[in-house]
Length: 145
Image 1 (spheres, one colour):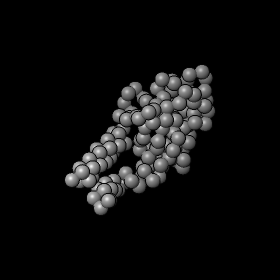
Image 2: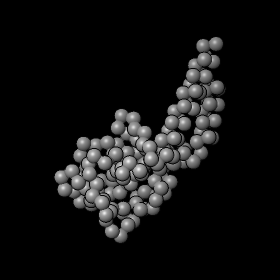
Image 3: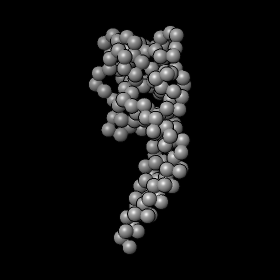
Image 4: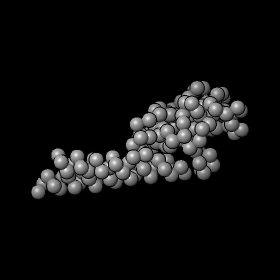
């Protein structure tokens, strides 16, 4: 009986965690962070070939950001932009998409930066695209074990 309860608890926790992660990734106006780390899906080609549309990126809050870092910043609490820092002046940054011809027209303040891209998780992209199959596989594995 105890084994069945453990399996059910594991299944419920797996499904809840998966749904929270899915919600955080798919809602571009919300960024769910855990210990300063969050994830987003790239929705434009402005950073190609470094980041492609549909890629899942992992970002981390940092104390300092330098020229060359790829950062995600909040624009007027409406949406997020992920671009590379091309110039820095104190706590102000000039950014540009790798695939864009010109720099962004707004200076980014440090307080608007959500974090630096630390990982382009191609595996997470596959998991996101096939999340229902993965959840089903995890549930089946938990039942078998």
